[in-house]
Every structure is written in structure tokens, then in C-alpha cells.
Image (cartoon, rainbow, N blue to C red; front, side):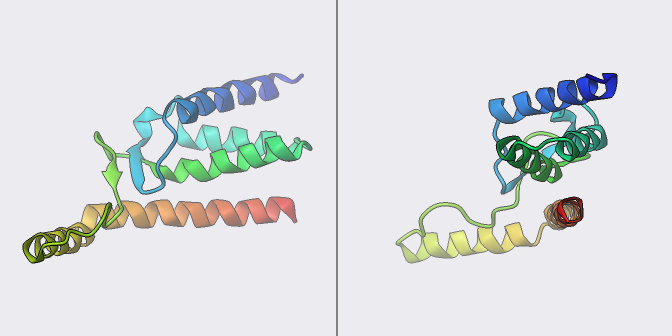
Length: 136
């Protein structure tokens, strides 16, 4: 086994441990400081392992790990940023419903959240395109 492959396995294994310990919520954006290695190094290692893997189950695991990477962005801090505009059941009372509506509008107006979500979405699209090209 090559030294590069052993390093890739170590990098991906460390990232896998992070995902097992704290499965990413697709509505949250986490600080990339939570990653065990630089995001680009994890991405490169995953693509290299994916290129040499024939087992469909492992290929799927590597692809899912790749698509989790955009949920980690620089400068987010703690706690993670929640991009979900609304969670839970709608309140029954008129006053509670108005208060919930105000919260939803305010959450959608946060420029930092919108920018980070747009960045994560763009990275996801780029990775999906790279995966398509690698498969084709």
C-alpha cells in the first residue's frame, strides 16, 4: 500500500470519526475548526480513495462524506448556524402565531446566515459536478 493511500485512509478515518460522533444536521453550518484536517485535504483524500475504490458500499460512504464537507465553513464559530427558517409545530394562538411569523422573517433576513448557506450550497453543487465527472 502506498504512503499516499495510507495517509488518505488516516485523514478520511479521522473525518469519519467526527461524522460518527456528531452526524451533521443538513440545516446547520459548522465551523471548519471542528474538522480534524483542512477541508481541502479531506476532500482530496476522499476523491483519491474514491477513484481507486470498486466496492459500491465504500464508494457511497466516500460520496456521502464528500457531500458533508460543505456544511463546514470558515469563521462560523460556536454554536453552529442554523439555516432552517422554522422548526416544530405551528402555534395555535393568534399571538404566538404572529410571534413565530416575526421570528421566521427575521431569520430569513440575516445576511451572514444567507451568505454561509449560499457558500455551502455552491460547494455542494461543485462537488456534485466533480462526482459526476469522476463517474462518467
